[in-house]
Length: 345
Image (cartoon, rainbow, N blue to C red; front, side):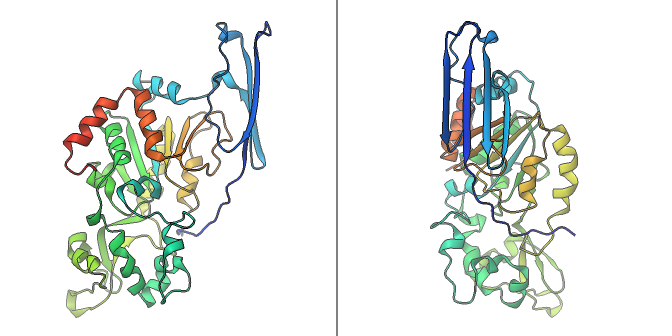
C-alpha cells in the first residue's frame, strides 16, 4: 500500500559554470552564480557556432553533470520542436503555485502559506487538518478551512488555460495535479486528461457507510463551515470530500496511468510545486534522461538543474508561462481563450 506522506526537502544551492572557446580563440566567457540557471548560452556569438566548444557544469547539492552546452535545451529550442511537430506528448505537473493566481492560498510558503498562517485551537500541528486519523476524531478544523479551498470561490487563471491550449493543439498527454480545487475541470480540461493525485471536492464519501455524494450535495455545508452528515439509512456519519489526506491511498489512476504516460512523454512541464510531497514528487524524475524538463516555479526544486535537459524559469509563474507562450507564438490564441471563456480571470 502506498500512501501520501509528509516530506521536507531543503532547497540546495545550484552553481553553474559555463566556459566556451572557439578553435580560433576569438572568444571566451565563463560565469558562476548561486540560484537558478536559465540554460541560455548567450555569450556564444561567433558565426562559426558549430565549431564552438562549450561546456556546462551544474553543481546541484552533491550531484553534478558536465555536458556539451551546444546540445542544451532552451525555451526557444523546445518551442521550435513543438511548433514543428517533433514534440507531441506533453505531461504537465501542477502544484499549488498554479492556483495562487486565482486567489487560493498555497500550503508551504513561509509566512504566507496555509500551514504557517493556520491558527486553530483544536489542532497541535497545521498538517493535522489533513490527517485522516485526526479527521475521524475531529473533522471540525478541516471544515473551518475547507470553505477557503472550495472551487466555488475561485476561477481558472492563465496557467489552467495554457494547459487547455495544449489540449486544443492535441499536445496534452496528461496533467497531473496536486491541487484539490478542480480548476482544471473549470477551465474545460476533460476528466480523462487530468489526474488529481490528491483528489478533489468533485465527489465525497461518508466515512461510515461509504455512500457516495456529489460536490453539490455538500457544497452548502462546506461554504457555511459546517460538518456535512450522511442521511442514508439514518447513518449520520461524517461526509468527507474525496481529497487524499495524509494516511490515505492515492487514486488508482495515479499509479496505473503514469506507467504508459511517462514512456510516451517527450516534454515534461512542471509548474508551481515544491516537490516536497511523495509520491507525487517522484513523477518529476520518471521521464527518460534524454527528455527535456521545464520548471516554471518561484524556486529551484527537486533534481532540477542537474541536467542539460533542464530548463529553469525561476520567478513569477504566470510571467514565465507568458514568456513560453510568446516563444511558441501562441499569444493571440491565449488571448482568445481568456476572452471567450466566461470563467477567465
